[in-house]
Image (cartoon, rainbow, N blue to C red):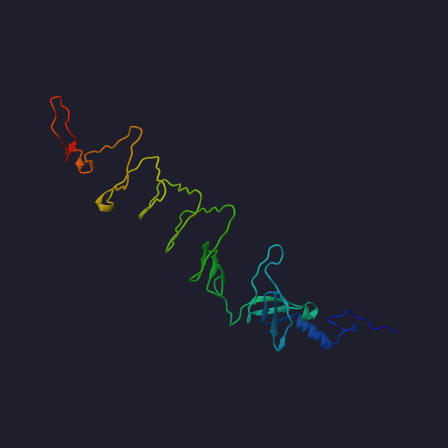
Length: 257
């Protein structure tokens, strides 16, 4: 008499061949759709409601989970699929990312890859236009820390800071044939120039240039003018007078207005 062949046990089953009803249950449990009902972020596990059933705590699939890891936990109400090896749901894994009426797609273009966050931030790339766009909501901040260096190469650059902008460094070099400052410029340290200075316009008090302090010309250099006057105190170089001269032509006194 032949003995009945036994099969391996599954989830506490005996060594006997499963009944047709048990086989049907296991097959149905291989793949089950549902929605996330609970999330344990610290334990990186979730529970899923599928029909009238709710699973135990199961791990979900991540984009990467090795040396490179990606963290984006599911949320309650997100539609998902439970993969159960051998039909045993207690050993299942949850695949999230199925759009639903309550959580519809955040785009309708085949050319755009877009990530939308709950606070309204959007990160998208349009490969048809080769355009990258990052949008943060009001109050948003961005913090980039690079220990070594950052290199940016582009044809044009336009940076707008609505209130203020600061650059901190041991040394800053503006390497351009022409540098234009459209507003007032305040230099709190020593101002040194090596290729001369030229300018025009009207400054404080109607003067082109105004200096509060003494000036010293060194190495034999002085002041020259192409027709304008030089006034020291209230004495004009062009129109000042002198006290009478003696018989030898020497001035008896200093210059007077």
